[in-house]
Image 1 (cartoon, rainbow, N blue to C red):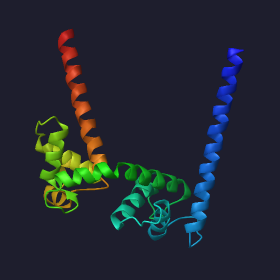
Image 2: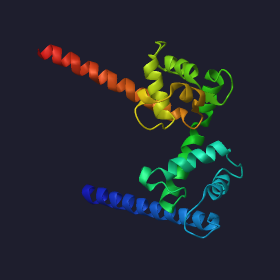
Image 3: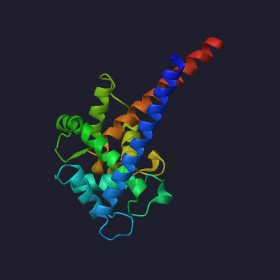
Image 4: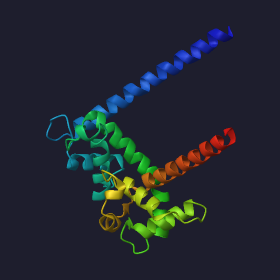
Length: 206
């Protein structure tokens, strides 16, 4: 009896999950149909902005926000898949990215209020360094670590050592990039900790 009840619950979960997937697919299809003014099955940046405005309860996102969502979604299949339009599969990523950003917007606002010293809307090198210092329990990060975070967060290609630091610093880390910058920092710290642990283990074995 217990096994039968458990099997019934699992079957219901699978049914509910499939229903949710179908509902999401219908939602995306409806949005695409409503905002694809050119009727080519894809959204350009202006059409995506109109769509995000509806998703955002009538408040139009800033151009920076629209550009960021557009770039994230259009790059989701890698550089080769980038074609300056949003397909229905990329639309799902666009909406998820937007909702994640909005969920974290109060925290992002607090970060910029504290660290964006000259109020440019960008965390330049020393702004970012101060933020990472606080994330690092008051220990100042090395300059090369700050550059690495900035390099990755701003989507620069190639080796961080080859980037024009003056240009990167002037551009800074934007509001849409700061969450990724924090993720990159913690990933770097985890990697360093793993290397220390492995080194310690090797010494013990020796």
